[in-house]
Image: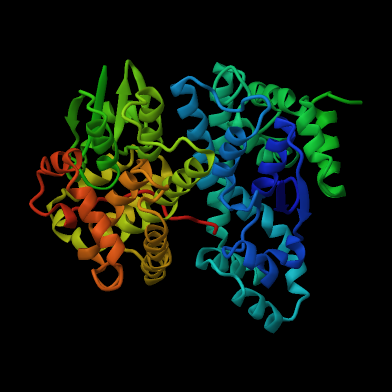
Length: 255
Length: 255
C-alpha cells in the first residue's frame, strides 16, 4: 500500500501527486494542512522527523525527499516510464530537477510565501515563537522565522525575483530546442517543473506570454493538456484549482 | 572519448576521478588550477558558464554537476556496478547525492576556505581576480566576492557548522545500520560522501574522530584503501589535500 502525506498539489507537495497520477498508481492521500503547521505536529514528526512535506510510505518504507521519491515511484511501479533510457537525456532530466530543487524553487518559495506574512501578523508573537521551536531543521526554522515575523530582507526578495526571470529565459531557450525538458519525452523533470511553475504566467504576464516566451507557453500547454496533470491539480483547494482553470483558459485549453 | 576537466582530487573533482578509476575507464585528464582562476578563463566558461569544475566531455557532450556526473557515468558505463539495483537502495543513494549538493559541499567549501584559504587569497592578484569574476553569473560573483574578502558573516559560518553537525551523525547512524551508505554494497553515495567527509577530521576534529564517530573513521579508511581511491588520491599535487579548499556552491537561501 502507498500512502502520501502531503499538502496541496503545489511545489514539493505536488510532486508525488503529479507523478502518481501519471503512473496510474492508486494511493491514500493524507492531507497535511501547512496553514495549521501540521507538518511540525508531534504525530507528523514521528513519521518524518524533518517536518517537511511530502512523506511517502510504501509497504513500511518511509520516503521524505520528493525528487528521489519520484525516481523511486518510477522504478517501483508499473505504468508509463517517466525517465529517459538514454544516459544523456537522463542526466539532463536530473540536472533540471536539481536546478529546480536547489535554485529556482527556493527563490519562488521565498516570493510566494510572502502572501502568508499577513496571516501571521494577526497571531500572538509568543505563540509563533513556540511554533518555531517545534521546527526540527535549522534551515527551515530560519525560513519560517523570516516568514512569520515578516523579516525577509528586501534585497533577498529582489534577488529571488531576478532569478525567476533569468530562469524563464533559460526554460525558453531549452524548450526552443526540444519539446520537453529532458528531450523528446515527458519526464520527471517536467513533472518537477510543472508542480511549481504551473501558473507562473498569471503572476508574470509582462515577462511570460505567447509573444515573449512562445516555447515556454507551448510547453505549459502540452503539460496542462495531460489528463494526469488535470487530475492531480483537481485534488487542490479552490485557490489552486481556480488558478489552474485560469491557466487553462489562458492556454486556450478550455473556454 | 572521455575528457575530464578537474582540479585536485578533493571536493567535487574527486567524485568523477574516483568513479572513472573504479570503472577502469581511460580518459584524458585536463587539470584546471582553480586557485589560479583557470576555471574563469573564457575557454573554460564556454564549457561551463558557472565556472565550476569538474566538467566531463563524453563524445562531444558536456556533462556538469559532479553528483549527477556520477549517475551519468553509471548509466553510460554500467560495469562494474556502482549503483544499487533495488528501488529502495537507489532512493537512499540519491538522497545522499542530494545531501552532498545541498548541505555538505556548500558548508565545507565555506568553512574550509575561511579556515585554510588565507594563503591562496594572498597569492591572488585581486584586480585580476575581480575582472575574471565579472564573467560569472551574478550569484557566482557574489560567492567569489565574499570568498576574496573572506567577508562571511558569523551567521553564515554558524549555519554551515550547524548543517554539518546535523548531517554527520546521520552518516554515522547509517553506517551502524548498513555496511555502506546505500545498503550492502559500495556505491556512488559512498564515493561522494567520502570526498566530502575526508577533510573533516582535520577541519572539524570535534565532529569527526575515532571516539565519537568510530564507524565514519573506519569507513573513511576502508574507502581510502581501495586501489582506485588510493591511485586517485596519490595524484594530488597539493602538499596537504585535506587543507585544500576553494569557494564552492551556494548555501541554501530559503530552508
